[in-house]
Image (tube, rainbow, N blue to C red; front, side):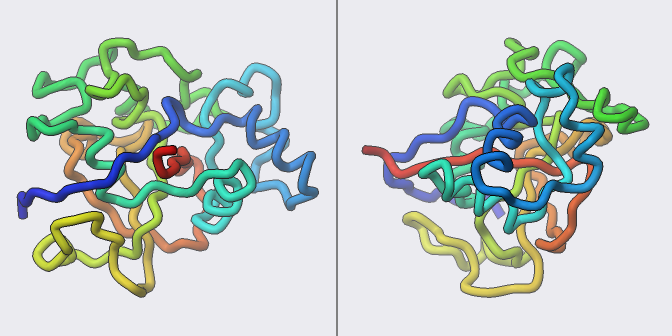
Length: 204
């Protein structure tokens, strides 16, 4: 259900974490590479979002970078602002000028597009690709009814659960799924070709 929440000030990355950024992290930490890494880690893909990462992979990267995964409430605030819009750019039905969506095949990472391609698709805060391109892990455990009982200030998500929340839709989704309020539960151990992440941090 629609409800109002209040959040302390925070910052969120303007873009998804890229293949190039993730490559530097892997090199610095010696962490095991994700599936299909030899395909993703080509120079032509370094400015595209990294995918095939689990929730733990994403959370660990953010910690290494001095940040954290956003809460679901923070993600939604960053995507829709304060006016209840349907999409990050407003209420206009998405077109190919707004977002990367509706594709059929991963095509060896070519289904994802480089960062910063959709000026018309930015959120009210200038954040790119909060709809389409890659789904995004957020910190919260998933509870289908959490919005009915969540606190009205800085909701942290359920204390426990079996699945985590992903938001934002991916390159393969169609128009209805691209809407901001779409919530999806995902096995936190899964790694697939449509889920990546971005980091957030408390305001300083």
